[in-house]
Length: 191
Image (cartoon, rainbow, N blue to C red; front, side):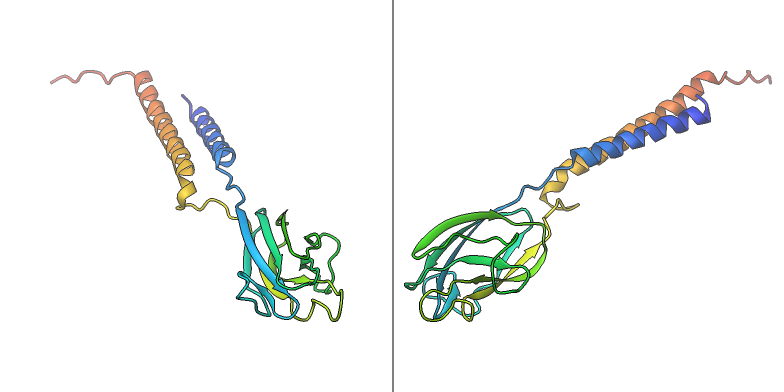
């Protein structure tokens, strides 16, 4: 086998191996995140009906997560939860916005590809006053989680990389022995 032929075989093997790793790497599925929030115009938001504060609790989600909000009003007003991406104190555009709720609503949305920390609010202003001054909190949207090299999802990647190393080693040894078979034995030495 010529040097050019060996190089070509090795190059094709490496390309196939890298393609296998890129296509076979597991995709981490988005998480299902359940959040219960209680809201009151006078007290703000809380994770329980007795822990309402303004600002409300910090929420953290990842891009692609399926978030289910269990929203409960702790007062007699109608509220509407939303993420205020543009910080204009009003829901609109591509901002996730719940339906109006006067008692409780179960609502879900998928976190968009917009990382950062934003305000979540209620923008209703029925009756005396408005929700905006007290019904605010922060939500941090992190990048989607991928498989780490040494994390729990890495076994598949390690198996594929190990298989590639074995294939390359077999090709190197096969090339070496192929060349030895084509080389005639040295002539016997006379004494």
